[in-house]
Length: 154
Image 1 (cartoon, rainbow, N blue to C red):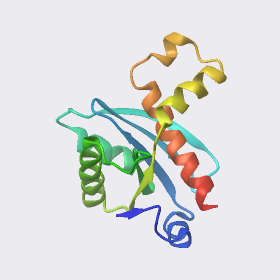
Image 2 (image 1 turned 120 degrees about the vertical axis):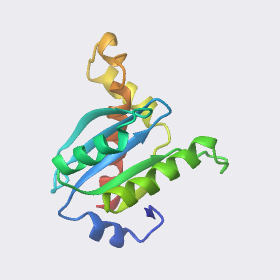
Image 3 (image 1 turned 30 degrees about the horizontal axis):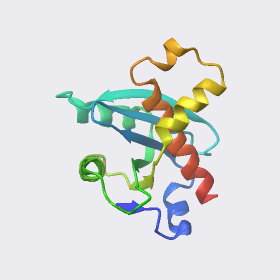
Image 4 (image 1 turned 90 degrees about the horizontal axis):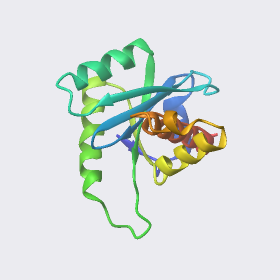
């Protein structure tokens, strides 16, 4: 597992020419988004229900169907350096994701992405009813995680 403190050149070599997926882990749902191998197009793909008994088979099938070559998992970092209890769950999820998929998994800061997702939807004119649709914010947050990471390694 990698984090963004790893040399940017190393991260670029892991991701270059590969389709990527980003996950926004939550207590109820896990939002996800994918990018193409050129890292130009980012597409929100929906959510997985975290408590589903078939969670891992769903995730692995989706990664396979999208031909994903690397994964990002967002971790909320606090400004004061303390770690929330959710971070332990996220690290466990990321570890399982790497073990089960065999893909490189990179941990990235996802602080405030849910707020930014809502603000983005408001800005582009998404109606309130659509913004409140279960999981919509989660999948947009995953897309933001992916976009921010790709911009950082350019």
